[in-house]
Image 1 (cartoon, helix red, strand yellow):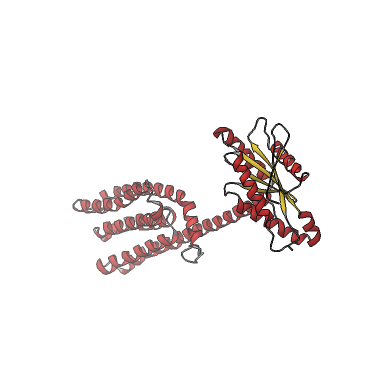
Image 2 (cartoon, rainbow, N blue to C red; image 1 turned 45 degrees about the vertical axis):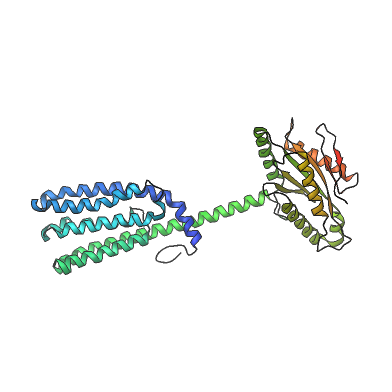
Length: 385
């Protein structure tokens, strides 16, 4: 954060913080405007003792003119345009309150000043600690009001120095106290936001790790089960067809044994990348253990589309891997189970797809089979291998 403005140095973080706090800023600003209007009007009760009848009209003109600003800000706060300029508008409310007080006090004799200038102290605290604007906006407003106050009552109205210094003492003290509280409050709020972001990132990281395979980054069995459940519920509502593809790599054990686990891990990562590149963005590729992968293809349309996707997957995995020798050929055997079907469970779906894949394994590999939902898989021709 910048030391004075408290703004985050990274623009995206600043934008995210303002977006996260915009509801609080809106509500606090609305409440503060209402309270400020009430206090400002009640202040008019003093006029009957300290304002000459012929000056009453001018005093109320200044007061009501200043009140136009919070009323306007209240109206804008009810629109979608408020959030983009919220802090500037709320700072303007404080500026209007202080300017109105100066205008009223300029029309009063020096003897009445002790009963009106304390409102400047209230405006200082109001702007720093209640209206809801950022510290830097409140600081600029209150410093500007302090300068204008001294220019008006020393240079133009010739207040005695000792009187003006007495006023300044309390106004400056209010700025020191109110400003310090405003600064520390906003700083603490921003530090708390950073901490919440760190905790959320840590929670997301742990959730990601718990639901994804650490080697390939693919969804693991737990996340796959959840997505199949969600797909099955959607399919029954919308009467759509989904397919599960159980893939077991052909030749992986030989690669792993011959070239070591490091090459084996590299191979699995490359298989994961190729599978993700082959399927649609809406499909799920999961690693469910060892060299076994599962593809959940939602809204696939019909079995002909499932056949086409299986051919693409087989062809992609049969393409030579750059980091493996030519003789170290890879491939896959695939079992496919369409769903939903009567009595379906996630475990049963995966079991049927696994059973179809095993049938391929025992009858030549490098092909795919569609699970017969009566319990017997039927082997379908695969790639040219």
